[in-house]
Amino acid sequence: VMEVPKLKLNTMKPGDFFGKLFQLRDEIHLNHLKVTGPGSFAAHSALNGFYSDVLDLIDSLVESYQGKYGIIEITISSAKSGDSIKCLEELVKLTDGGSAYSMFTETWIQNQIDEISTLGYQTLYRLKNLK
Image (cartoon, rainbow, N blue to C red):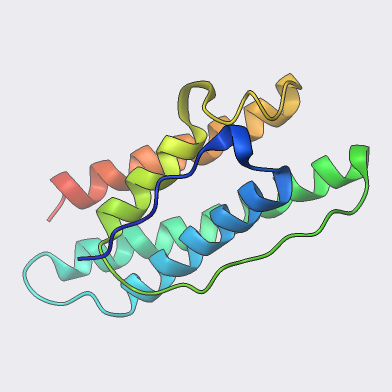
């Protein structure tokens, strides 16, 4: 079982935040390729939908941020497969309810972050309830 480290947003910079989102997306993609057992088709499909849709959302977020503030350095840490639910829970901890809002005060950026939260929670629902 993979432990995703907790991040302190007050020490994060936008490039760190964006890199973490990309890393979690990559981890979900790896998990998607390893799903087996009962309910695996439903999980495989839910993870496929997540990793393909979230890439567009993150990409749009980064592009619009850089459109206002200029190009920034983004580092994506190595991704390892593990527990999809824990990855998604870490993602929504980073994006839900204003946890990243202290870094981004613009409502249009917050809206893009909310869309990532929405997709994360939708995928958690599918993984936990649709088998």
